[in-house]
Length: 140
Ligand code: ADP
Ligand code: MG
Image (cartoon, rainbow, N blue to C red; front, top):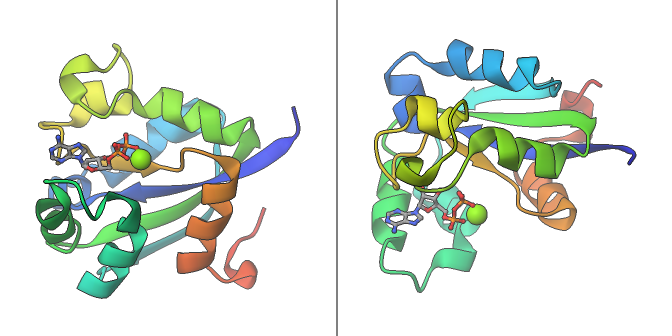
């Protein structure tokens, strides 16, 4: 398996509770390298575009409100099998169902405010990275 990249967001519940360093420690301990990182305030338009796939879901409005409720940290993570590995490190969407030791089990308080986003495929990772990063801002 070759080295690949995935896209990560530390969501507003993480920045609000001052947990970005603690979450990054879990990411780095798992062998994923943070090769791009920026703290931003997401606009409503950016959040709607990012989560467009969920626009018919009942929680879409709540999700966009949450993602724009405070700063987020957007990241590019690099490593062997990074997409699948980060999904494993994050844990299940609902923290109540997440495995011990995962980011969501350790830090998240609800299925909506679940601390992290990670791409679900290599193709989506490329598109998501392109929404928030220029190539020159990723240094591997
Ligand atoms: P994941 O982030 O694990 O890939 P999904 O792609 O299914 O999960 O959902 C995107 C995001 O939408 C979740 O991370 C979570 O913030 C929010 N979400 C998902 N399901 C619900 C729900 N039932 N109620 C509220 N928010 C939800
Ligand atoms: Mg998803």
